[in-house]
Image (cartoon, rainbow, N blue to C red; front, top):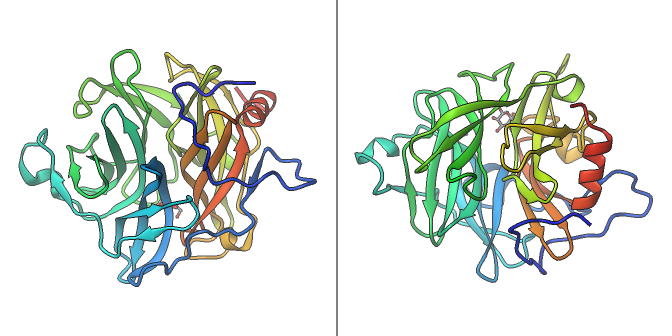
Length: 331
Ligand code: BMA
C-alpha cells in the first residue's frame, strides 16, 4: 500500500464505495451535485471551489458568481463535507502586515480559490483581477478574518496552487501563465519563495499533450504528498468544434524536485459526461479545485466544479490512482 506522507486521519471524510461494475479508478457521488447553483440568494452559480478539514468538520472557499455575474469568493462551513452553509456575503479581505498599504485590496474579481493549511494558518490562492487575471494570495486563521498579501505574479496568470509544505526551505507554487482572455494555450510552471511574497526560481513543469489535454493544462487541488511523489490532479482542455472541453487527469511529481514529472496520465481520469457536467453556463467542464485525504484508508475525495454552474464530489483510492497513472503514463 502506498503511503500519504504528512497526512492526517480523517475518519469522517465524505465517502461512497466504488459502484459494482465500475472499471474506472475514480467515480462520482451518486447524489451529485452537492452544491446547487442557487444555494445562497445572490448566486447565479457556485462551482470551482475548495474545502479543508476545520475543527470537527470542514471549511471552504467557494467561487460564487452572483446575479450581476460578478465573480467572488464566499466562505462556508460543513459538518460532513456534503451539506454546506455558505455566507451570503462575499469574503472581505484586510491587507496583511506583510503588504505595503492597500494596493493588495485592489481586486476587480476573484475566482477559482484553493485553500491549504501550512504551518500555522490557512492560505488561500485565487485568480485575482488586477489589471487582468493574476494569482492572489491571502490567509486566515479562523475563516472569519481574511488577509490579502501581495499578488504572487504579474498578470496574466491563473491556477495558482500551493504545495502543502515548504520544500527545501521554500514555499512552492504551481501556476499557469496565460493571457487576458480565454487563453488558448498554457503550460504548468513552478515558482519558489522564501516568504510567500517574493516568487522566483521559476521552472517549467508540464506542457499540453494530445487529446483531452491538447490546448492547455492547469493544476487542480493542492498536491498530495505520497511516498511515490507528489500526486497532482490537473485539468486539461481540448478545443472541439463546439468549444472547450475541460477534463482532468493526474501526474506524479518528484518529491524534492517537483518540476520533474515522473508519470502523467495519457487518458483522462474524468471527463464531462453527466448532465450537470455537460449542461450549464459553460457546458462540458469538470474542474477540480480540492482534495480531502484520509491517511488511514488512502481515501481521496475530490471537489470539482461542473459546467461552471454547480459543485460535485468524486472519490478514488490512492493506490488505484497511482497504479493508473503509472500504467497509463505518457512521460
Ligand atoms: C477557465 C476558468 C475556469 C472555468 C473554465 C471554463 O478559464 O475561468 O474558472 O471553469 O475556464 O469556463
